[in-house]
Length: 242
Length: 145
Image (cartoon, rainbow over all chains, first blue to last red; front, side):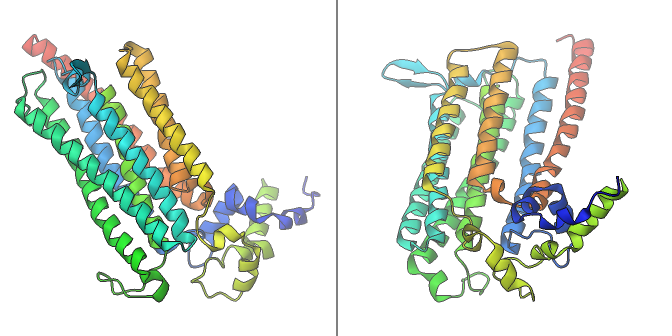
């Protein structure tokens, strides 16, 4: 068995090293840095997103726990989030529109990253502004939803539809998600302005860190934005559809 | 077993292994020129993929969202409902992470570091499901609800 020549392994291609287990071990045991394909900025955004994953997981798991443990019937999201359009009651339609809105914003963000790396800064900036617009629209619809529910008497400590824990779960989960979207919109506007002005071409220093930025910032911003969309996928499934 | 270790070692210390220690623009490593030449063009200019791919994923996400909405619209119940919801959810999440967040093109070292830790959440979920079930049982027993 040991007669097998080891030298064949030396011709391992770059692709193999990128995706194989051997490559992973090599990356982790190498000098200086483990994430070869990610800059520190990108790696830190990913690590932040992992920690944020745990925050939202805790919210969703606590929601699961209170929903399982209550003996009162859980309110039906399908009916609560229905809207009357043209005299017909359509179940959950507002949430469906919000979902499509957020997916669309993710699509425009992905294209903005592409144009930023291609150094087509006007296109990238406009696509980021479109993304910010869809994000703002999402927050607007959420504000509408909150207003409607509050008028109907839903409170964190009780509601007229069923189990009291519905209100606290709803406000906590959608509130934190909406907060993330809002922060995302603000940062999209800031980065879009920098891209539009060509800050990353001339090496202008940022207002916050006083460091020179690179077009990679658009991709890092994109990671955050797609994460917000990703969290909504889980909220949509577990809170609204379950 | 011994052979495996030797192969592993040879990869770590081989000339091709050296490739990986020098990478993107900001590392000043003696092997940097070699590495730059060896890297595909897309890598050198960040994550650039055809717009067509993004549009395809966009369309798929729309389709999958429509499917999960229809689960509610047609009012499926029981295990079928939960199964469909989870399948559509995981497919959507996978598409977003793999393509929009470019995980499909990252090195395994990053993929593993980012995607494995959240699985610990499943343990918490199992424990809290057990706990929630128990609390519910106690409430039924003692409050007769």
